[in-house]
Length: 242
Image (cartoon, rainbow, N blue to C red; front, top):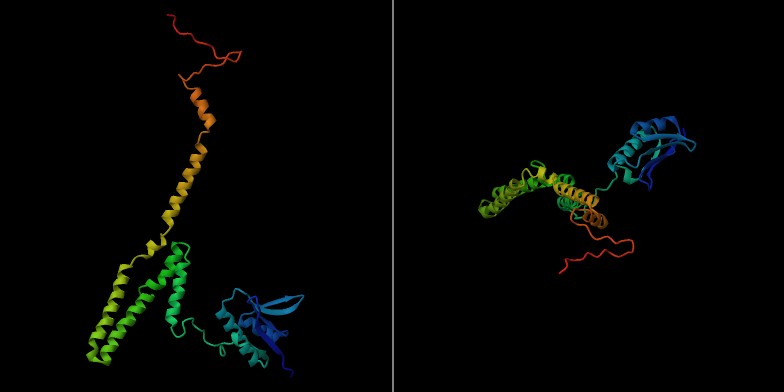
C-alpha cells in the first residue's frame, strides 16, 4: 500500500493549512479534528481560520496528526504545531514569571481607554479571591509561618513577614468596593464636555450679528436719528431765538 504524505504547516497570514489530504479518509479525519474543508477550482484543501487562537491551532493540528498517523499516513508537523515538541514559553524576566505577568497587567492598565477597560485590568490585582494582592498576602503569610516552623528562634523575622502580610491586607481593605468607581472614571468629564460643547454651539447659533444689533438699536423708540434730505444734507434745527 502506498503511504500518502500529508503536510500541516502555518502560513505567514497565521492560518494553518494542510497539503496532500486529497482522499476521502484523510479529509474526514481532518474535518473531525476541526479543520475547514474547501472545495473549489484549486481542488480540495483544509485550513484553520487566521482568527483561531494559537492554543487551539496547536491542539487541533496535533490531534489531526495523531489520527492521520494512526491511519498509516505519513504526517509532517512542525514543532510549533506539535504539543509534544513545543518548547515552554520564555518569560521576559526569566524565572520570575509572576513579575512578568504583573508587568503585563500594568501595561493593560496604562493602555486603558476608559473606566471600563481600567476596571477590568485592575480586577486582576484586586479580586478578593484570585487577585494578585490576595496571592501576595497569602505568600507573605506563608513565609512567616514557614520561618516559624523551620526555626523557632527566628520569630522576629517571621513577625516581619506577618506585618507585611497585614499591610497588604490593609491595602485591600482600602480599595474594596472601588470597582464601580473605576467604571465611572471619565464619564462625568465626558458629559460635562458634551454639555459645554452644546452650549457653545447654541450660543453661536443664537448670536446676533453686529449689523442686526445696530439695526435693532436704530429702530428702538427714542433712538431716532436725523435723516438726510433729498440734497444729501441733514435738516438744520434752529434753536430758540434770543
